[in-house]
Image 1: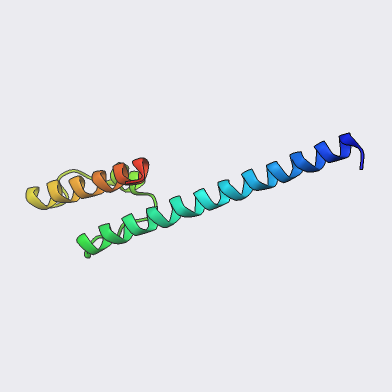
Image 2: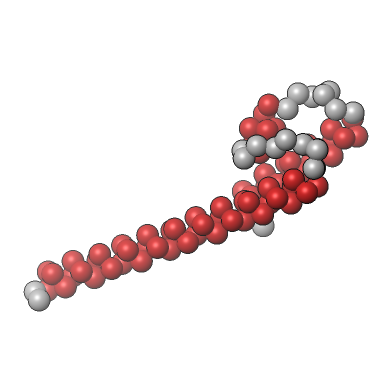
Length: 88
């Protein structure tokens, strides 16, 4: 095998390994986001939350719930969005 072919094969191996790492990381992020959404659904069982929590916040109409429930709802959803963003 020539030096050029060896270098080419090594580069392909590196790219394949990098792709595998990205796929594992994406899967871990998606699994974590699913756990966060599950925790939120357990804390707010009566709410119909979509996949996109930021969109749920954007579509929320202030005053549609009693004040104490509204504050709790908004705090929990914002906390879940922050947890997913920071991965904690």
